[in-house]
Image (tube, rainbow, N blue to C red; front, top):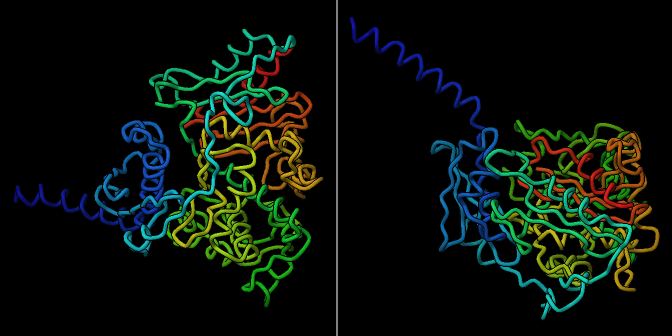
Length: 452
C-alpha cells in the first residue's frame, strides 16, 4: 500500500509531463532550430567562442534550455531540447549556415560558392571608407569627450548589464570619428555580427540595383506564377517592398506560425512565403512581414535567371563596390538568400552600407542605386503611421522623440541598428546580442549632443 501511495504521484507527474511535451513539441523545433542556426553561424561564420554564444546569444526564453553539439570536422551543429526535437545546421563555404531540414548534410556540403569579392590589400594603409585607415580630419564642431562618453554609455559589464552591446561605430560627414567594441564579449573590429532583419534593407539595395538595370519595375505585379489565378495576382513589387501585400501573415515567433515554419522548419523560405493566402486588398494596409522580404529574394532569383549570377549579385553589384568585404548573406537549403534575417558583417562594413544610403546611393562617384531610390525608400508605407518605408524603418512619427524626423534605419533582432540621419550628417551603428534596457533614443540623443 505504501508503494502505491508513492507510485501514484510519480505516475501523475509522468503523465502531466508527457501531455506537456506532446502539446509543446512543435514549438521545441523553433527553439532547437534557432539554437542550431545561431550557434553554427556564430562559430563557423563569425569565428566566435561557443561558450560565449551559449552564455549571451542563446541565454533567453526557452532557447536557454537547448544544448548544442558542435562537429568541428564536418562544420555542423546539432541542437536539442533535453534530447528532443533535434535540429542540425551545417556550414557551406560561401553560403554560410543553414538548417538541413529534410536534406542530407553530405548533399548540402557538396554545394559551395566562391565569394567574388576583390581582396583589399593594405587595408590599414587605405583611407576610410575604401580602407580602414582613419583620417586625421578635425571637426571643430565635435566635442570629442562628449562623443566618447556617449559611445561608452552603450556598453556595460556583461555580468551586470543585460544590454550586451557588441560594437558601436559613428560616421560624421562620411568619416569614421568614433568606434568601440566589447572585449568581454569577444568582439573585435573584424568580428562579423548578424544583422537579422537588417537583411531586409539589403533586399532593398538589391531591388534598387535591379531597377537601375531595368530588370525590375516596382510598379509591376509580382512575377509569382502561383498567384496568377487568384486575388494575389494584383500584388506589386512596391506592395512587397512596403510590406502592404495584403497577405495573411503572422509574425509570431513564440508559436508555430508562418514565420517560424519559414525559418526553422522549411528548406525553402520562398515557397513557404508565397503559399500564404490572400487577406486584404494589396496596398490597403501595412503589416510587418518577414515573408515579404523572402518573396522579394525569390523573385529576384527568378528575374536574374541564373543561380550563380544570383548568388554573386549582391557581392559584385553592391558589397565589392562599397568596400564591404566581411559580409556573408546566408541562404536556405534551397539556395534562396534568407532576405528576412540572415546577414553577417563587421561593424565598419555595416557602417559602409549605411554610408551608401547617406550618399544617396553613390559611392566615390559610382552610382550604385538609381536616382531617386533613396527617396523612394523613405516614402512611408500606407497605414504605417510614418514608421516604415521600403524595407527600412522611419522616424516620421517621432517614435525616437529626441532624434530628427528625417532619420531612417535598418533594424534587426537583439537591437541591431544602422541609423542614418541626413540632416545631422550622421551614420551610427549599434550591434549587440541583446537590447534589454537599451534606450536607442537616449543613445542617439547623447551622440547628437556631442556636436556644438
